[in-house]
Amino acid sequence: MADTMQTIAAALAQLPLNTSGAIGPQDVRDIVETLRVRGGSMYVSTAIETVISTIDTPTKALGTTTLVTPAYDFTMPADNRMRYDGVADVLATVQCGISITAAANSQDTTMHIAKNGTVITSSAAQRKIGTGADVGRAAVGAQLVLTTNDYVEVWLENNTGTANITVENLTMNILAFAV
Image (cartoon, one colour):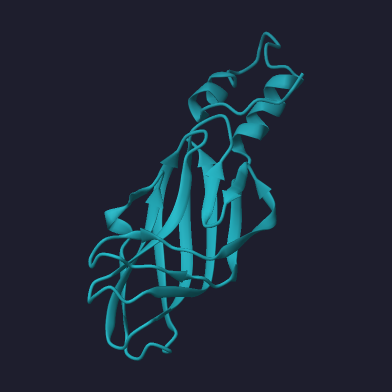
Protein backbone atom coordinates (compact mmCIF):
# COMPACT_ATOMS: atom_id res chain seq x y z
CA MET A 1 0.00 0.00 0.00
CA ALA A 2 1.28 3.50 -0.82
CA ASP A 3 2.19 5.82 2.04
CA THR A 4 -0.24 8.74 2.23
CA MET A 5 0.34 12.33 3.33
CA GLN A 6 -2.51 13.62 5.49
CA THR A 7 -3.34 16.71 7.49
CA ILE A 8 -1.68 16.92 10.90
CA ALA A 9 -5.12 16.54 12.54
CA ALA A 10 -5.81 13.29 10.64
CA ALA A 11 -2.37 11.93 11.55
CA LEU A 12 -2.84 12.77 15.24
CA ALA A 13 -6.26 11.12 15.25
CA GLN A 14 -4.48 7.84 14.45
CA LEU A 15 -2.39 8.00 17.63
CA PRO A 16 -4.65 7.05 20.55
CA LEU A 17 -3.06 4.94 23.26
CA ASN A 18 -3.38 1.96 20.91
CA THR A 19 -4.60 -0.37 23.66
CA SER A 20 -6.57 -2.28 21.04
CA GLY A 21 -3.64 -2.52 18.61
CA ALA A 22 -5.52 -0.37 16.10
CA ILE A 23 -2.38 1.46 14.98
CA GLY A 24 -0.69 -0.66 12.36
CA PRO A 25 2.53 -0.33 10.35
CA GLN A 26 0.72 1.55 7.55
CA ASP A 27 -0.61 4.12 10.03
CA VAL A 28 2.93 4.76 11.27
CA ARG A 29 4.25 5.10 7.69
CA ASP A 30 1.44 7.58 6.89
CA ILE A 31 2.37 9.67 9.94
CA VAL A 32 6.04 9.70 8.94
CA GLU A 33 5.05 10.71 5.38
CA THR A 34 2.83 13.48 6.74
CA LEU A 35 5.62 14.91 8.90
CA ARG A 36 8.30 14.76 6.16
CA VAL A 37 9.61 18.18 5.17
CA ARG A 38 8.95 19.09 1.54
CA GLY A 39 10.90 21.65 -0.41
CA GLY A 40 12.89 22.66 -3.40
CA SER A 41 15.29 25.23 -4.78
CA MET A 42 15.94 26.89 -8.13
CA TYR A 43 18.45 29.39 -9.44
CA VAL A 44 18.94 31.58 -12.51
CA SER A 45 21.37 29.84 -14.83
CA THR A 46 21.06 32.34 -17.72
CA ALA A 47 20.19 36.00 -17.17
CA ILE A 48 17.53 37.44 -19.50
CA GLU A 49 16.33 41.05 -19.51
CA THR A 50 12.76 41.51 -18.21
CA VAL A 51 10.85 44.02 -20.33
CA ILE A 52 9.15 46.66 -18.19
CA SER A 53 6.35 48.27 -20.21
CA THR A 54 4.51 50.15 -17.44
CA ILE A 55 5.87 51.98 -14.40
CA ASP A 56 4.83 50.59 -10.99
CA THR A 57 3.42 47.40 -12.55
CA PRO A 58 4.81 44.04 -11.41
CA THR A 59 6.00 41.74 -14.22
CA LYS A 60 7.16 38.15 -13.99
CA ALA A 61 10.96 38.06 -13.94
CA LEU A 62 12.60 36.46 -16.97
CA GLY A 63 15.66 34.24 -17.00
CA THR A 64 16.47 30.59 -17.52
CA THR A 65 16.18 28.78 -14.20
CA THR A 66 17.44 25.41 -13.06
CA LEU A 67 15.81 23.18 -10.45
CA VAL A 68 18.18 21.94 -7.78
CA THR A 69 17.72 18.23 -7.13
CA PRO A 70 16.59 16.54 -5.08
CA ALA A 71 13.34 18.44 -4.68
CA TYR A 72 10.54 16.94 -2.61
CA ASP A 73 7.00 17.50 -3.95
CA PHE A 74 8.13 20.55 -5.96
CA THR A 75 8.78 20.73 -9.69
CA MET A 76 9.72 23.51 -12.08
CA PRO A 77 7.34 23.28 -15.09
CA ALA A 78 8.53 26.64 -16.47
CA ASP A 79 11.37 29.08 -15.87
CA ASN A 80 10.95 31.04 -12.64
CA ARG A 81 8.12 28.79 -11.42
CA MET A 82 8.22 26.35 -8.50
CA ARG A 83 5.05 24.22 -8.40
CA TYR A 84 3.85 22.24 -5.39
CA ASP A 85 2.87 18.72 -6.49
CA GLY A 86 2.01 17.25 -3.07
CA VAL A 87 -1.44 15.97 -2.12
CA ALA A 88 -2.18 17.79 1.16
CA ASP A 89 -1.97 21.50 1.96
CA VAL A 90 1.38 22.75 3.27
CA LEU A 91 2.65 25.87 4.97
CA ALA A 92 5.57 27.02 2.83
CA THR A 93 8.35 29.45 3.67
CA VAL A 94 9.72 31.02 0.48
CA GLN A 95 13.07 32.83 0.56
CA CYS A 96 14.82 34.44 -2.40
CA GLY A 97 18.10 36.22 -2.83
CA ILE A 98 18.06 38.35 -5.99
CA SER A 99 20.74 40.42 -7.74
CA ILE A 100 19.50 42.77 -10.46
CA THR A 101 20.75 45.40 -12.89
CA ALA A 102 18.78 48.00 -14.83
CA ALA A 103 18.93 49.39 -18.36
CA ALA A 104 19.17 52.96 -16.97
CA ASN A 105 20.69 54.81 -14.01
CA SER A 106 18.92 55.75 -10.76
CA GLN A 107 16.10 53.21 -10.93
CA ASP A 108 13.94 52.43 -7.90
CA THR A 109 12.85 48.80 -8.22
CA THR A 110 10.67 46.43 -6.22
CA MET A 111 10.90 42.65 -6.13
CA HIS A 112 8.01 40.41 -5.08
CA ILE A 113 6.99 36.81 -4.47
CA ALA A 114 3.87 35.85 -6.44
CA LYS A 115 1.55 32.90 -5.83
CA ASN A 116 -0.38 31.61 -8.85
CA GLY A 117 0.41 34.85 -10.72
CA THR A 118 -0.74 37.17 -7.93
CA VAL A 119 1.86 39.33 -6.20
CA ILE A 120 2.04 38.92 -2.43
CA THR A 121 2.09 42.56 -1.32
CA SER A 122 3.76 41.83 2.01
CA SER A 123 6.75 40.23 0.24
CA ALA A 124 7.93 43.47 -1.43
CA ALA A 125 11.60 44.43 -1.19
CA GLN A 126 12.84 47.68 -2.72
CA ARG A 127 16.25 48.36 -4.21
CA LYS A 128 17.61 51.50 -5.86
CA ILE A 129 20.08 50.84 -8.64
CA GLY A 130 22.46 53.81 -8.84
CA THR A 131 24.04 53.03 -12.18
CA GLY A 132 22.62 50.59 -14.71
CA ALA A 133 25.56 48.20 -14.28
CA ASP A 134 25.32 48.33 -10.47
CA VAL A 135 24.41 44.81 -9.33
CA GLY A 136 21.93 45.41 -6.52
CA ARG A 137 21.13 42.55 -4.15
CA ALA A 138 17.95 42.12 -2.11
CA ALA A 139 16.15 39.39 -0.23
CA VAL A 140 12.43 38.73 -0.47
CA GLY A 141 10.34 36.18 1.30
CA ALA A 142 6.83 35.08 2.13
CA GLN A 143 4.97 32.46 4.09
CA LEU A 144 2.15 30.86 2.10
CA VAL A 145 -0.31 27.99 2.29
CA LEU A 146 0.05 25.92 -0.88
CA THR A 147 -2.39 23.38 -2.26
CA THR A 148 -1.74 20.91 -5.07
CA ASN A 149 -0.54 22.68 -8.26
CA ASP A 150 -0.09 26.10 -6.63
CA TYR A 151 3.06 27.79 -7.88
CA VAL A 152 5.47 30.49 -6.73
CA GLU A 153 7.40 32.98 -8.89
CA VAL A 154 9.49 36.16 -8.59
CA TRP A 155 8.06 39.35 -10.07
CA LEU A 156 9.76 42.73 -10.61
CA GLU A 157 8.65 46.30 -11.05
CA ASN A 158 10.35 49.56 -11.90
CA ASN A 159 9.05 52.42 -9.77
CA THR A 160 11.03 55.12 -11.62
CA GLY A 161 10.27 54.48 -15.28
CA THR A 162 10.16 51.75 -17.90
CA ALA A 163 13.84 50.82 -17.99
CA ASN A 164 14.19 47.04 -18.25
CA ILE A 165 15.51 44.97 -15.33
CA THR A 166 17.79 41.94 -15.55
CA VAL A 167 17.97 39.28 -12.85
CA GLU A 168 21.69 38.55 -12.76
CA ASN A 169 21.43 36.03 -9.92
CA LEU A 170 18.47 34.46 -8.15
CA THR A 171 18.14 31.64 -5.68
CA MET A 172 14.67 30.61 -4.48
CA ASN A 173 14.37 28.15 -1.60
CA ILE A 174 11.08 26.69 -0.38
CA LEU A 175 10.55 24.64 2.77
CA ALA A 176 7.06 23.28 3.39
CA PHE A 177 5.35 21.44 6.23
CA ALA A 178 1.96 19.73 6.49
CA VAL A 179 -0.78 21.86 8.07
